[in-house]
Length: 411
Image 1 (cartoon, one colour):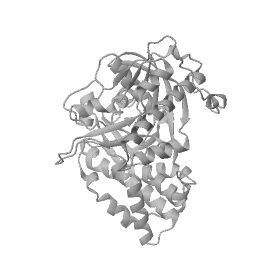
Image 2 (cartoon, rainbow, N blue to C red):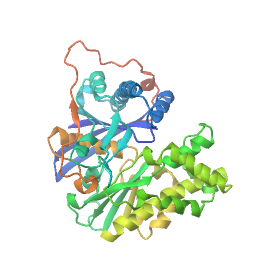
Image 3 (cartoon, helix red, strand yellow):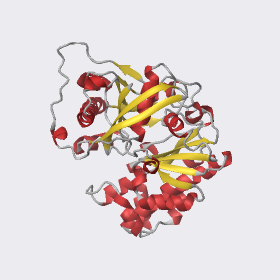
Image 4 (spheres, rainbow, N blue to C red):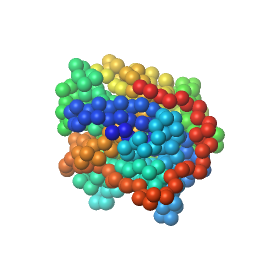
């Protein structure tokens, strides 16, 4: 199958669209990523999506954003088709993760009903592209008692189990808005994989930079602010005492614990100690690094040694963050996805292409040992395009197609 896969992370910075060719079946899958484009969210729509993730948002706003986000995902597919030179009818299906706005997984001792919400209406994507869409992957795992996250471990296992087969164990560390890790012990079967959300990735740093620059900047590009600052160890240690970090996996989290509200709290704490802007960013970066190290020491190292850590997500583009990880995780070798031939921007979208492929073949793709699901589950819902022969699937805004700055990417 040739699948167009769409992914937008918790940072809501862009939509990654990837063309992936997949052949074979479980245990003998060939995965070939071919083309990748990053399609930007319009600033106004991005701001509305971030506001939607806050408590108290109105249902009508969610319903409207669901449709608008669907239009944006569809535009990303058209952009991918234009860049790759593949007509839309050459895609067997589209895999869409959607945009997460709420994630409330089951938690120990809590009686609340677990739920997760990803918007970006697949019916709109199907209508605008004329292709079947597989979407809403997380619900299937939550329905069998799982966290609904992380779902990438299935792809991590397929992509990395043989690449590091002779090593002691490998950790695949994603650092997006939230940090999450997949641990594959030496000789592991799918049920031996351990995965969970470490805690905040770039989310706190991004929110702090946005707040303290009045929205003029959205991130600490290249880690320049953090490099010029000094982290406050006392504040870092106070954050490490939060209950989430000692909670054993399976576990997952999101903006409800580490979003803008917590970023404001961190800023206030730092101001009490008279820290500079650079110090605040450095403290946020150190929290991310410390949370990752702490989670490895608590939950991974007791299971076996780790020889390699492969870092992906936006954090892989922050050299200061990478250097701190190398210092803290030594003697493990810390690499990035790009260093082993996997495009960092494409990785998560590739993972959902694989999930969609398995769904379309009726095969389960959650990893119960990672999510806590009571059973394996076929994930996602399949949305078919309209059958009316006269339906116009052309897009109205071709400005993005006329101004592509990124050439086709071929692995």
